[in-house]
Figure 1 (tube, rainbow, N blue to C red):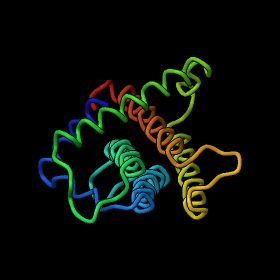
Figure 2 (figure 1 turned 180 degrees about the vertical axis):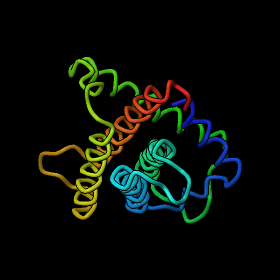
Figure 3 (figure 1 turned 45 degrees about the vertical axis):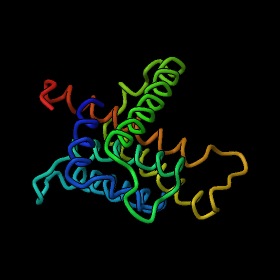
Amino acid sequence: MEGCRDIFSKKLYDYGAAWRIMRPSSVTDQIFIKANRIRSLEVKGVSLVGEGIYPEFQAIVNYGIVGLIQLELGYAEKEDMNADKAMEYYDKYAQTALELMLRKNHDYDEAWRAMRVSSYTDLILMKLFRTKQIEGNDGNTLISEGIDANYLDMINYSVFGLIKLAEANGNKE
């Protein structure tokens, strides 16, 4: 998460909070692009762009947090947030994701450690399709968790993927 936060902070410096104009559905689509690229790289085994799977999982973490911020605040017509406030929101939702992860780790006995990275990718894609369905229903569900819960799960699956990839590379990431 520290690496994800560092990237978010640096991009905030470079671009400001330009993401504030994105509607949550656009954030969902951006996460879909990242998850779909991960799956493509997993299947093809080669990247022609030069960036691998690790940075894409980092991007999903960061876009997931952006999505949670946008769900809370709504989108803006122009950049309306300074870097300090953006980082405050980032830290709030990173902490929310961590607390959820810890609770689920307790209940599931860290089953994620026995999973393949490709399974995290598939679960993220499934969560994306669920999120798109909920968005198509104007955010309404009958029995299921909402968009925010799906974003949190996508963040946590991405963190699991980052951990597993770092471990496989001798924590060089």
